[in-house]
Image: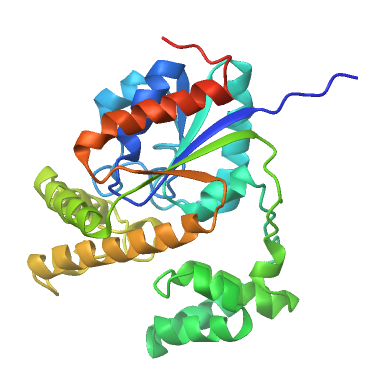
Length: 319
C-alpha cells in the first residue's frame, strides 16, 4: 500500500517590519512559490498603505493569494482563513508549485499548520450588544478582566483592545459554559511536510524599523487613505478599521487629537504588537529562527535558508 505523501508547505513568520516580504519574494522567485498572505488585514480592499501590502510591482513577480478579497465592511475570521488557506495549499501543490504562507498573525498561522478546531457556538446578538455597551461604559479593560476570570488562556492571547474577539469569547462561555480555549485544539503534529522560517531582530533595531515604517506610511499617504475610507462610510464600528494605523488616525481626522499624537500612538501600539507576535511565535518549537539584525549578514542568512529548503525539498525546481 502506497503511503500518501504530505503536501509541502513553507511558512515565514516574524514580527512586523522584520523583512518577511523581501525574503518571501526572493524564495518564491527561485523555487516557483506562490504566496498566501497570513495577515488578517491584507484581505481588505482599499487598505493598502496601513497594512503594508506588497507593492503592485512585487505582486506581479509571483502569484499572491488572500489579498484584496473583501470590502472593509465584510467580516473575516481565523476560521475563514483556515478554510481558504488549506484549499489553496492543496491547489498550489497540485500545480507543482510551492505554497508559502507569509505573515505575522500567529493564530492564523497555527490554525493552518496544526489544524486548530474552532468553536461553532451559536450567536446571541442581544448578549453581544450588552457586552459592547459594557466596554463603552466601563472600559475595554473591565471587559477583558471578565474574560480573564473565566478563560485566562484566551485572555492572555487577546489584547484588551480586541473587543470583538473578547466579546466572542465571553459569548461562547455564556452560551455553552465552555471556554474558547477548550474548543481550540492544536494537533500535535502538522499534517504538512512543513518548514517554518522565523525572522527576528534585536529589539531596539526592530523598534527603530517600526518607527521608520510608520513615518514612511504617513509620507506615502496613510492619512488620505483613512480619510477616503471614512468618506466611503467605513468607520470605527467595522473590524477592519480597528487595525493598526487606521484606528489611531480616526480621532485625528475627526479633530479630536493632533496628528503627532496619532502617529506616536501608531508607533507605540505597533511596537507592542510586535512584542505580542514574538511571544506567540516563541511558543512554536517548530520554527527555525534567523537573526537579521545586521544588514550585512542577510545574504548569508538567505543562503542558509536556501540550503535548508533544498535539503528538505530536494524536488524543488531551482531556477
